[in-house]
Length: 299
Image: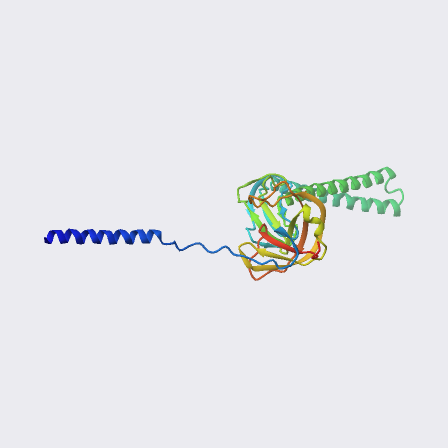
């Protein structure tokens, strides 16, 4: 009899345990993901567009007028540079090896020029102040020797200057005051003349602009100096007040693709450029923002 009660008790415990498992599995799961942020349009009537942050100077792909191995790299991503500050230097040892020879040629040519100049000054003084002391022929020979020595000296100096100018091409300077946006260059990298594709070094000014693409069928609604606001994606509390700069009067193919199911990638767009003050949160060139441009209510 006790064995029967034990079996019944075990069966009841099994039923209770099974019921608990079924209840646990059927209970709604608590979501672990964050809710999708929502924003409210800042204007009653507006045109929406997509903006991409860019340097006011646009991106500058830095190249080199000559090819060579990068010997020294003076900057890194994010470095602030001044106009004329060196960015990198290519190996110029072959050219520098010629410097001593050309410098010695300049020194020798200058010495010869001074020698013939001193002779000519004496001969000229005798020719003018003591007629008959020196013949006209000897005077002209002396003058021509001095002029020839002067020409050789000038030529030697010109050759030296050409070499130094060529050596200077191996050190590439910053064309603007700005920031290094990207640097894929390393010491030892082979640099092709003009920089190659993709570029190894990209510069941009510190001031940022926002290039907004508006679908062509909405372009007619855009008015100059209309109010505009941009939002950082995923953060509706991070917004930028935009100031209109200009509109590029050319409809171009859409470049900012969002990969949304309803997006038309064959749409052409009007590009409107805005300026904004640096906010208290980070904004980077290349970042895309959601933009709303105010329009008239009856548009």
